[in-house]
Amino acid sequence: MAVHTTRMLIIGSGPAGLSAAIYGARAGMQPIVVQGLQPGGQLTITTDVENYPGFRDVIQGPWLMQEMQAQAEHVGTRMMWDTITSVDLSGPPFRAFGDSGDVYEGETLIIATGAQAQWLGVPGEQELGGKGVSACATCDGFFYRGKKVVVIGGGNTAVEEALYLTNHSPDVTLIHRRDSLRAEKILQDRLFAHPNISVVWNKKVERFVHDEATGLLRAVAVVDAVTGEAGEIAAEGAFVAIGHAPATGLFKGQLELDDGGYIVVEPGTPRTAIAGVFACGDVMDHTYRQAVTAAGTGCMAALDAERFLAEREFLAVTQAVPTG
Image 1 (tube, rainbow, N blue to C red):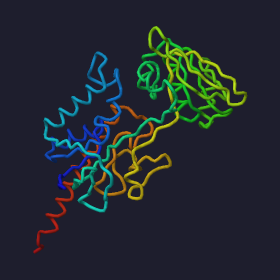
Image 2 (cartoon, rainbow, N blue to C red):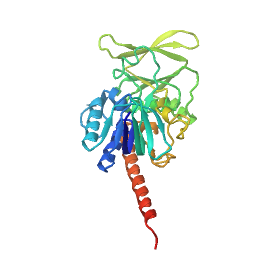
Image 3 (tube, helix red, strand yellow):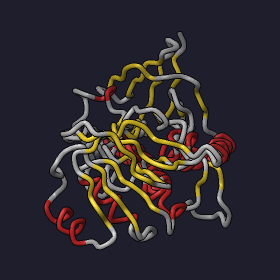
Image 4 (cartoon, rainbow, N blue to C red):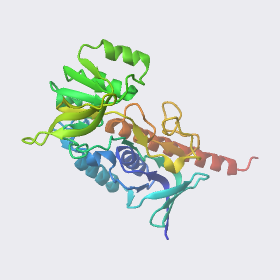
């Protein structure tokens, strides 16, 4: 067992964690990033990225994360290939225990463990990822401009995604397995009033159907929840919008979580209720969930962590000076 110490410990290696590492390293914090089960985060399973600033052409998600990691290492970040299994937030120092048996201690802790989209778990869903099936309309809607698309779900996220997709598609269908929506009334009113959106009720998605010639999505196979009748709904794009699951299991009982399981932070900041512990990216953001916003909050977390340490050191010095 080895103990690794740092002024800034970062759990998670997506855009939020690596942005925090870049800023922390440039400030002399010598951060450690524990990468977790999915180094690079969700962008490593995202093919085309067209909305990250600074690139004229479409770039690949895995390549972007490789470049972010290389930049973080170049300025002094230590990358650790380990998965955290438990944490002790009673510090500082804050302690994280790795699956390897190693222990990581940080004077500050930045949580950037992200969130995962919830999937239906039906045939064709993963196989057609990037080929017609997505879990983020804001990320991928542009690729389906002028095409027929469907959104699957009945909550706020599904309705918001359907409304957003009307910016690109003249034919949006919302598929819901029940006969009423869970979304807020104001969102429902906007949905029902939109001329380019239709709603299909009581339909359970059974599988995603690909076109034999192109290998791309052709239709969504559904079964009527009332009659049991099977059918297909033609679509070139399908957006699964049944929610996200933030990776916050490690922090239950130690940090405040909201009803959706996201870490609660002080509004407009990455600061948690524990001084010296910060949360950034999708683990605390249930609204935007974009790579660029995650990177922005990672920057904020690093800056706030640096200020926290500076203030603590200043207080230590002033309190140690004897008064005459």
